Amino acid sequence: MCGIIGYIGNNVEQKLLKGLEKLEYRGYDSAGLCVLRHGNFYVEKSKGSVEKLREKTCVKSEFGLGIAHTRWATHGKITIENAHPHFSSKGEVALVHNGIIENFEELKSALEEKGVYFYGETDSEVAAKLLSGRLSLKKIQNLVKKIKGTYAFAIISKKNNSIYFAKNKSPLYVAIGKDCSMIASDPSCFVGACDSFYPVDDGEYGKLDLKKVVFIDKHDKVVLKKSKKLDIDYFVDGKNGYEHFMLKEIYESKNVLGNIIQNYSSPLYKKLLEKVTEIDFNRVYFVGCGTAYHAGLIGQRYFMNNIKKDVFCERASEFSYQNRILDQKSLCVFISQSGETIDTIASLDYAKRCGAKIVSITNVSYSTIACKADINLPIFAGPEIAVASTKAFVGQCAVLFLLSKVLSGQNYIDDLVSLKEDLDFGDDEKLKRFAKKLASEDKVLFIGRGFDYITSLEASLKLKEISYINSIVEPSGELKHGPIALVEEGTILVVLATESELFIKTINNAYETKSRGAKLCLVTNQIVTETIQKEFDYVFKVKNTTSELMPVQTIVLLQKLAYYVAVTKKTNPDKPRNLAKSVTVE
Ligand code: AGP
Image 1: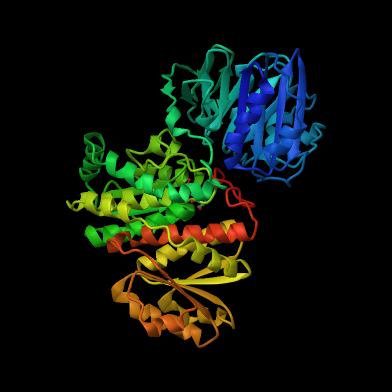
Image 2: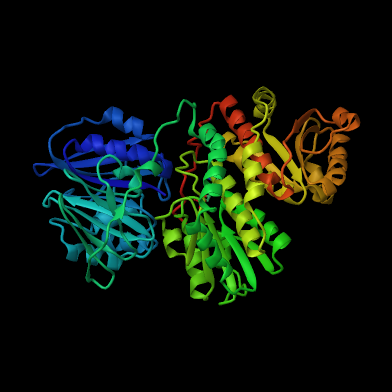
């Protein structure tokens, strides 16, 4: 998943760099830009963050056009040669790409047989080598006909004064302002320059000039599009005084719950929920990746508790490769913060082909998944910048909770209101002390039963992805069937026990590890007797709330714990190594 941007107007370098900063959540292994003025290219590339590229770039105010790219490496190492933009053989065409060209080896060897030299290892360079000289819509049409896979291209040539583009399954948007025009992987790049934008659809290609844009569809017909208003409030900037976006976004969970309560109490969204109740289904699939998958597991339990139907939850990367019963009586709920995760898009397309009804729960209403769904239920979380998903998980659980209640004809607002009022982010000093202890560990074990097992999965993912600690999760009852062998003197065991009827069982499972040298940390809303207190090295009491919403109350505490561990280890909680915010490669 990479970010691409193109700009026509004054101060091209500055505008490209500013746009790349907004796209860095899509990958930050390397960055580069290419600006065309008076028939010549000015090119800069850097390994690492956009800041490194900014340090090297000589900015000019005069009019020009340019393209830029921030990379999450898929094909080829993180080197300057592999950084985009990539160039045609004679260097007169420059191209940036987000996606995966699946047939790049075949194309590359055909070109090499004709004597074409490749300076890098990427699939994207192959696309650039398929182009030359003056660009035209015909040439772009020929390019996309040769390519199999996913792409968002922005392409310029020394012989043209336009930006050419093409899109298939990787996000791409175009905007025309009063004194500039832009193309980007995310409309947030248009804030401040344009007040409306056009989504580019799969199979479309076209040409962008300063004042006009031409869209051609996959049948090579000109398409006239309606622009969408840019919701400026959505794209808020800045950390509001927090050191990292992640901590700010953890605390924003309270606002997210408020937004959900307010919006889903309004006639507009109540009507949307009613539309879901009109769907005739006899089985439900929740589908997502990572945190969104964990939210799906929570949703599955909500539906099991409230709706008497068969309910399943699948990882999107597995879903379309199973022979599941999928037909007109299947309701598929796709969960995705970005709405651009390609595994989830592929699963949605598969479910659609099987005739299933499609509901999506997303944080980006103009995203691919939101637009493909029959009904999209927003989580109103606002931009989530940190790679580690926090407030979005809270929003996903809240919307799944209200969906399960609406489908079973129950009230949902009161429980959400009390959760929002009582949401407690824990004792900072206590969390920091335990984080200091965890930071020196290379292995941490989480256990829990029922909802607590799912919350453990999510807490463990946070720890893994931002502090790089090998964090393992086991259902408490499974320990003695093998995983307890992992326990050695000093192993940290984090025990989640918020479900009263499972509390004693889980405590006893923890004792089994204590006798083998484990250090125990208890996270619970239950009464902690003196005996239990004596056995546990750390105890975190979480505020009680509706049992089905305890995962939300518990996770905000554990998100903060993971954050403090990362800060102690001096990793970058907002941009952890090897990751990106939106995974647009399968
Ligand atoms: C979560 O912290 C990770 N960033 C990752 O697992 C993420 O949840 C996953 O890639 C799904 O992203 P999506 O919600 O945008 O589809």
